[in-house]
Length: 156
Image (cartoon, rainbow, N blue to C red; front, side, top):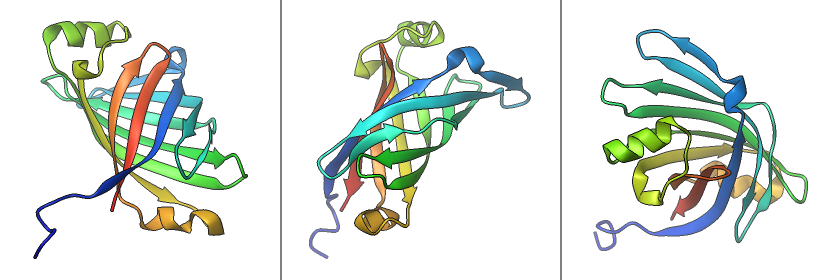
């Protein structure tokens, strides 16, 4: 059973998203659903880099305590032309009342402002990236001045 008590990981890429908050669809309802278009972005890492394609979306529901449940589907295109679907779910929760106020006002803050972690999964048929279909990943996220930033790590 040696090794089962540890978790091995490696950096996969850093992703920066362009989200169109002006085009958000605030649906409401019991879980206060909001849909935020992902209109682009970029990603770069040791084994792949490229752009985030338009037409993705971040479906966010808010819990009573202010915690956000995140459900994002988007597509990536690598610099060498591979298309990769990316779906991730996770949680974002401000870590203090001040952080919650900054988040509500779409102001950037330090990484420590948010507990923001997701679990991406990938789908592709490009032969150079088939390994992504078998990769479990986790992220650390934050809101930067230019928008959401995720550091994506592959679990090995």
